[in-house]
Length: 83
Image 1 (tube, rainbow, N blue to C red):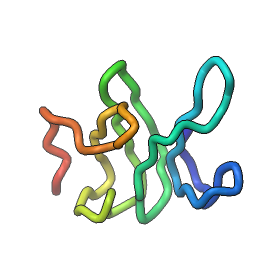
Image 2: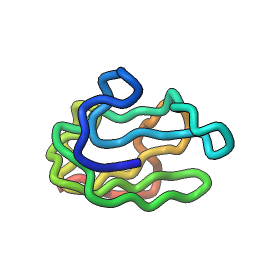
Image 3: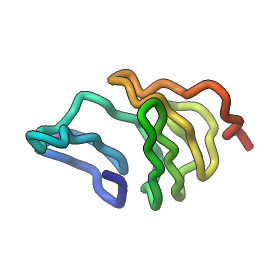
């Protein structure tokens, strides 16, 4: 899920959160954005997030970031999302 929020299930998640499709439980995957997300594109391996942010996980990523879909939410290979 992406949008304009600061907490999910009483936890301090901002802008992006992942849920289990079968149980709707919150997944441990998380990314730290400094503003809200406006769009998501998800594949089996990657998550592309677009929005009004300037940083993702403390790194400069203006408006778009490519992340792995794994629990660690690290930057995905093969995308140049720096400005």
